[in-house]
Length: 582
Image 1 (cartoon, one colour):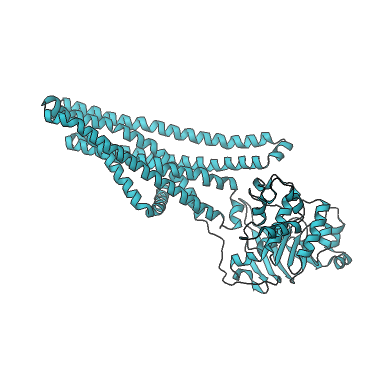
Image 2 (cartoon, helix red, strand yellow):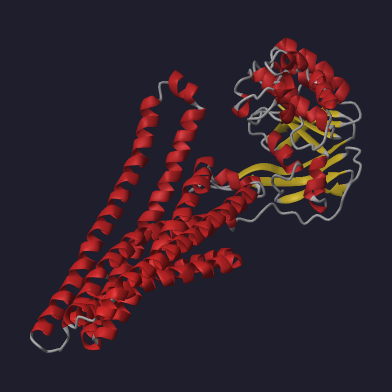
């Protein structure tokens, strides 16, 4: 529990750091809420002069002024309520804007390993559901907290001004209330954390079911997905019910303690232990009754604040993630394309409860600029991992990777990646126009350059047939296109970038033989004067490479051109002869 308290304080301090630049608005909100609470408290105190001066003493001057006092008070109250609620709402909206901006910036700056251990459903849940919880807390919940807290304080001041002796009874109950609220806050926080965690799981399941809806249907997995969903949904439901029970039980307990105090006060007053005028007694009782409402709201809002703090904590966990390491200082303005791997070893982090997966072991290889090099081997041999290391998505555990003799770790990350173009088997397109997808990330390029790249990738004919040509929106991940069309757009994007090092990771796997033949002829011209690294299984692609590298279990076992490797009758020959071996 101590750790929970320390964590809460740490989260609160960081939240204050976010709000600090907005302190003038926050100060105005606090002042407005103090005035609001003060007016409500003073309105309760007015029972005393109204009874003693008005109805008992018949003070006509006071009675004539009283309506004006009421109108003035509630005019001030209305203005203060509007300003306080608006100011806190504005702070909440601004905070959400800043958190979402920081989260998005973090998502696009964290290393690839972060996404290996965090599924996108949970990350999206944090970005939407958790941030919305923060918005509600900092806006409506915090407004209620501030207003009602000052109202309670104001009512206590009214009670003390009427009778400090009777007020002692109220103060005896306050420590009990504080302990109860503390316990409830901790329980709310724990339950809120569980609810938010399962919301991420639910989002993940729904996201996978939507993305793989064809696979779910063809394999008859509706029952399995439904059961998986129901497990998390039921757990989420149970935690929500526990939170509801805690809140529902908390309010009547607090009200019962307040009622005991009120009964004791009435008993003491009517037995003349404390002498009060009629106006003072009614004012004291009115304040006691009035304090029940803000206490109830404070206990109810407690659960919302607990959700908000838990949500903020989960967001800070993401924001604390380190970004991609970039200690490089060197810049290569031009690159020939010589690539070297020197005793490179790499292991993927262990999955939960497992061991690290070693993928590369003392891998060494030198490649000359301007050559096309095909990497072949069984699945898991480490071919794609080499490409990921070259792009510095990961860093080798041992060894160095060189471009034109320079260790890529010494290069600025942005500079390194300007010299690389990648086309992978898993094409990623964006819910935007064809034009923007081909020119993605390349700043100002002309439409003519985009068309030239599209023609080189054998994509121009089908682009022209689209309803709006280059301006056609292709839907999420290009779902409005065939697999071959999507892959040709990705190849056009790489061609347009015109980088000196081209990585083709199963780039033609989704194409039919005719489309592949046309693209291969285009790529042959494009590959001139650049280093091309190819991962492929099609013999037609591999045999045309200038050099072939054969890998087994993270090690280089053979290298050479197609003819020489076939003559050796080694690993490459065996892969070549096996049905589906390459």
